[in-house]
Amino acid sequence: MAKVFIYPATSLILSDLVARFGHKPLGAALGIRERIQTAGIDSPPLQITPEEPKRGLKYAAVEVPSGVRGRMAIYGPLIEEAEAAVVVNDADLAFGCMGCARTDELILFSLRQSGIPILELKYPTNEDEGVQFVAAIKKFLASLPKEGEA
Amino acid sequence: MADYTPDHVGTVTKYVFVESPSMTPGELALRAYEASEGVLIKETCFGLQVTGEPEAVDRLITEIRTFDPTHIFVKDRGFPPGDPRRCRANLGGARPGYLGHEREFRILRYITHGLEEVERRGEDAAVPEAAPARERRPLLDIKRLQELIDTEES
Image (cartoon, rainbow over all chains, first blue to last red; front, side, top):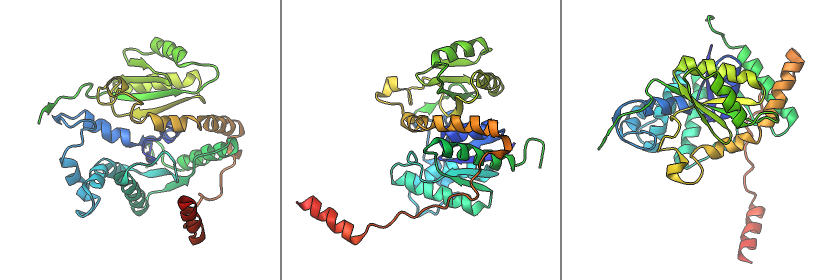
């Protein structure tokens, strides 16, 4: 079972397809869950504490705004852990403030720099594209090592 | 600063979305309760949230997927169900993250069709030769900009 980073990191479709075809999806929920279940200082709503931008220094320079570094503290370890990635380009649900936008750019840059296999797609807009979308993901995931291999 | 003591430590929560012509979230919840074995189940308008020990949740999810394999979709959730930081009962309006789910919910029918077709065709399913390259959005043409300015001024 390979660990597959998904982008958008909150995507229901990618998370489901990766798990359905036998691999572990790495999405935002895993990073958030880790913080929500760790005791410390009360910092609602996401338990992002002042420590996170410091941890984010590993993934972004000190001149980068703390909002981006804080977000990278969640996504950076997941990208490091990932053995492959499935990316949907131009997803209209992957938008947000400038901090989110710059973090998204940094996530995609980090993924491409990491050298792991990446499948890039677009969301389907009709049934034929739906078939191609599912088939492409299935084929890509089948090429990754399964449980017990590697 | 106040101390924070987490609930549901060591558990996982997963969303189960059902987009099926033959099964409602209510029916799914009833069938899931029968197989739950101690996993906390919360019925929602789009499906379920299940919370429990990772192994028990995985077992239940495997069981739930068999009810309607191409119409049931699952993803992880960071928060436990009903968490006051996320629950719309406390916040008002849509739950943060709901609108993203709603957007993807509209294209689930294409994914369902894709899953059915890929299963039917087996290895013959059409796969695009190369991943579509990222397109650069065209820059705003200077004439178009002038038109926009003129329209705005008139």
